Every structure is written in structure tokens, then in C-alpha cells.
Image (cartoon, rainbow, N blue to C red; front, side, top):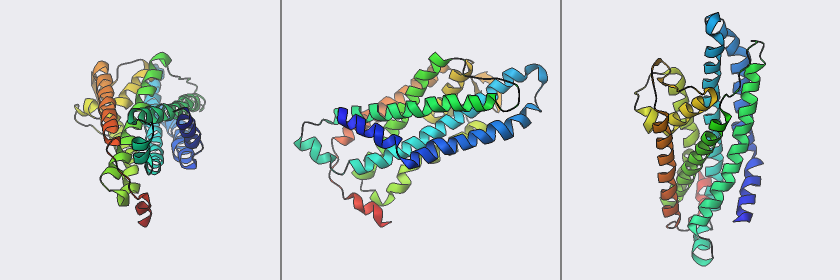
Length: 275
């Protein structure tokens, strides 16, 4: 377990694709938001409420960028697990390795990676928005609340990417492996657009883990209960319901992961290279 944990942490943190898409790409958009879009936004809001409105504005940016960063991490996790599971059926049947032990090892390893990246984003993004010439300093106001939210978000994306890797192998979907592995990032952009620009049905706040996590990140950043929809800010969400939804999604997918790992068989992963 220790060796697998160490391998996962080192391998993932040194993955150039993750560094490019999960860190540098997110920082690039943070620079655009902080130094190009934020100054223009401030000119359009009342001077008397600019500090409060600006903090909410930065919190939305922060929530969007963290979710996109976690989505990029999920893509890397799916690829790593896909190529690990080639020999996993033999290890589960002919060694002392158990499915629960394997899942626990990869969860802990990727959780450490996720926290490292998201804590980096938590430091970098507010720093950029507080040092962009606007004269307003804004940093997360509820760090003790934000840390558990980051952990929960990382665990959800780990469980989701693990699920995608397993079903790819279980149902002989190697030829679609590249597309399936990018599903977390594709969904990240879809729900980022809904969260930021669209008025969507309120029920999606509680049924979509992406929207639930973005609203929780907003809550952890500002300490204020977020609106049900940012295009219609009259009603407020239930934070308890958001947490419950996110926890249930993570637990259910994790249980499915453990059950399906026990039942996978050897698959020639080289078939994925034929596309």
C-alpha cells in the first residue's frame, strides 16, 4: 500500500499533462480574469458596495478555476488507472492485494496530489486578484471551511475518474478510452458555463456534483450562503443539502468502484492505441 501510494503521488505530480492543463492552463485563465476582466468589471459596479461585490466576483472565478483544475486532474487519474489495471486482475486473484486496499491506496495518493494542486490554486488565484491594480484585497474568508470542501471535491473527482477507467475496461471500451477519459474535463467546461453564464433549473444545484462543489467552494471562499442561481440571486441554496449531495455521489461511486474492480478481467489495453 505504501509503495503504491508513493508511486501515485510522484507519478502524478510529475505528469507534464497535469502540470500543463491542471496548473499552467488554470493560472493562465486566472491571469486573464485578474488583470484583464476584473478591472473592467469594477468600473461597472457601485463604489459603495465594490468590496463585497468584488469578493463575490473573485469567489466565482475561484470556484470555476478550481473545478476545472480538479477536472484536469481527473483526466490524468483516468489515464494512469487505465494503464495500471492491465495486471490488476491477476494481482487481485493471485496475491494478497484486495480491491478495498487498492482503492484506498489510489484514493489517498490522488487525494494528496489534489490537495497540493488546489491549495496552490487557493494561494495563487486570490493573490492575482488582490494585486492587479484594483486596490482591493480579497482572500478566502473561511479557510477552515474551505479545506474540507477541497478534500470532498478531490475525493469526488477521484471516485469519478476511477469509475470511468474501470467501466472502460469492464465493457471493452478501449477504442473509446481517450474520449471517456476526457469526460470529467468536458463536463467541467459545460457546468462552468452553466454556473457562470446561464439560468438553469434549481434542482441541478443538488443533483449535479459539479454545481454542488462550485457552490460549496463559493461558500468556503466568502463565508456567505450562495444564491440558487447567479443569474437570479433572490433565493439561497441549502448548504447542508449541497454537502449531502456531494457526499452521497462520492460514496455511491466509490462503492461501485470497489464492486467493479473485483470483477474486471484482463483486457489488452494496446487496443486503445489503434485509434
